[in-house]
Structures are given as C-alpha cells and as structure tokens.
Image 1 (cartoon, rainbow, N blue to C red):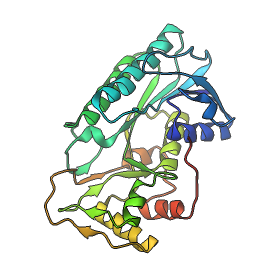
Image 2: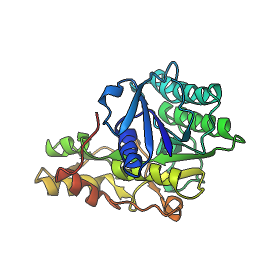
Image 3: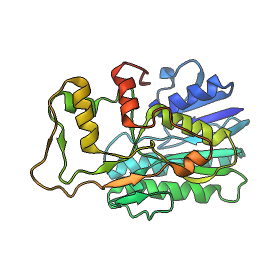
Image 4: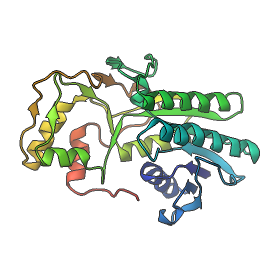
Length: 283
C-alpha cells in the first residue's frame, strides 16, 4: 500500500515509520525532506502555497499539518491553505485515495466543560479552534461523495519525547495549579501515531474520532505527580481564580470500539517512559 503524509513533522514521521514497518511505501511532504528517515521518501513541499505531484498509486492520505506561528494568519495558512492545496493536488492529478485522515485538535470544543465526546457541541472561541474546525469541515466536505473514506482525528494535547515544556516548568518550580483545577485531554505522541495508522488501515471507520488517553486527569494531579517523580518542588495552587481553560473530560470510547488501544493509557505510563529516555522526537 502507498501512503502519503502531507505535513511530515514529528507526529507524521512517527506515523510514517509505523506504516513503513508494516510494509507500506510512505511518501512525506514537508519543507525540509532531507531531515526525514530513510524509510520515508521525502518530497519538498510548502503546502501553504502549493502541493507537489501526487503519486498515482496513493491509497492513504494523512493530512498532519502544523502552523509555523501562533497567530491566526499562520493557522489559516497552514490548516486551511494547506488542506486546500493538498486536496486540489489530488483533484488536479486525478488520484482518489481509498482512505484519508485529517489530524485535528480538541481545541474545536472551545470553552466547553464536562463530559465530551464526538457529538458534543463545537463552539470554539479562540482562533486556533475556529480555524481547526473550518479545516475539518473543508476536509470532510471536499471528500464527501468521492469514494474516499474520510476521517477526522481530534487529538488532545500531545506529549512525548522531546516535548519538555511541562517537565521544565515543574523541574524549575514554576508550575502553578489553576484555581479551580481542571481536567485536561492528552495523548502520547506514539499513541497518536498508532491511532492514525489504525484508522487508515483497519476496518471502515470514518467521520470524527477523539484521540485521547483512557483517564482524564486534572492539571494539578499531573504536575504534582511529575514533581514527585523528578524530586522537584511541589507545585502550589494559584491564589487568584482563573477563567482560562476548560474542565473537560474527553472520551476515547468511539476510537476504542475500532480496536485501537493506547500503549500509554494514562499520563503516568507516558511520563515514566519519557523520564526513562524512551523514544526520540523527530526533527
């Protein structure tokens, strides 16, 4: 099987290596293809402006884009511009993949709190959630009726090898627990990669799936656990109340019904692996 990964960064590369290990041919589009491992055929592409020729035998498309800035223009160029250029290239070159998957984010739920699943309302307030939701809708609308099974994978906050911001905060004694504390959605990078591969190579699941671990945990629980594990100062609760962030418990039940299961079902297993030096972040 031939797989095309449009936006082959850390997550896309990890998924690509897993496709390759299963015997599939993998092409990765990114601006610096020379940094890809040998198992992935790299092609230079700035998807904000255009897309290269699509391999005629492409059966699986994975759109795993990333913005190169933290403002709305950067998000629109990456997620809306990039998705449009990728799908335009498939139309231009007359290629219809059997499966296509768009990597999205739980940011589309905005300030929604409580128990959340794929049918929960999406009312994003911040630009990142709004743009991501627009890109999801564009992806699904463009592929509707084409014969391609289209899937959106909404990932929680990705953590994993080389993603050290939270570890650095805790180690430095700079992590503060919000008041009130809140549950957060997360997934280890490797589990996100296996979900991508699973959804595009097993069964006929399509539509929207949430990619998170098994156990929503509060921010306070996670940083206190990390502090104990690293023998760092115990994070304290903020004195002033904060309205930033939602208290959200995202469910992976739909994804699990497809046969997928996480290697790191909770933050504890995931961070134990990271602290033990397991895994590598791909450049």
